[in-house]
Length: 305
Image 1 (cartoon, rainbow, N blue to C red):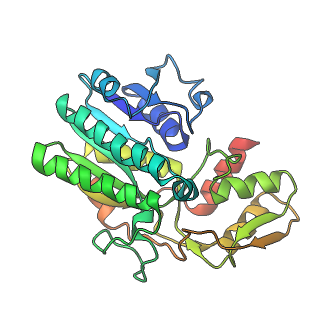
Image 2: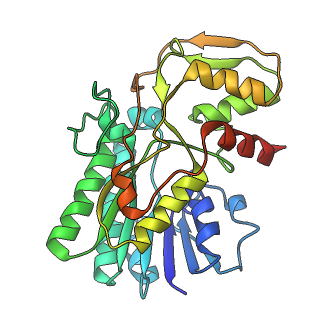
């Protein structure tokens, strides 16, 4: 069994990843619970998973915990565009300095590979669709800037120190354990929560903006494939299909069998207009999404009922 580290492992993606990793590996979850919830791991603790209440800002802690680790899955981040606009300094401290700490601790402990959670936000409002990894980044929020810097640090640590790294550019991830109550909640958990309460779905903008949604189980699969593969570099992780937010709203209402309307509000600062991934490069690590949007939504809704 490999020793694996999951930073941010009490969060939405991190907890799903830790659960899957624990079936064949020992897992240390590091999370300061600023966004994650220990309850996401309650059923798993003691089953090859150890939880450490700690921050990626504590490099001494990271160096100690990374000893003899095989793989580090770096999920910890301030992941809200809106929050990054409100507090760019805190976002930089966590997402840039924290990532640098993770890479230094991994380098100093001879970790085999670091798999870094990046974001499609680095593309910004590029007119080029679908978005390929080689196009020029155009970040439009402090969050997007920090994620791009993290990618550059991964590339430099591989080139300079010989630390293998993979950066996975997540598109719009959704699924079980995603918090619908946060002020910064993503659109799918917000829609599901509103529908379950019989309330109209709120859409920011005209709803014709598009997103490429990817089910969390496919993201977990991508992380594990990235660790197992000899390939390094940057990869889009998405479904490779886009949908308008209006279409998404109709799909959620239909799946939940609700007779609900939609309320439109002003466009949010930092939101991009269109997003669609080219996922052909991810085939190099064996990635192939297994869930389309309707399948993933049904699993997500079923998990809440």
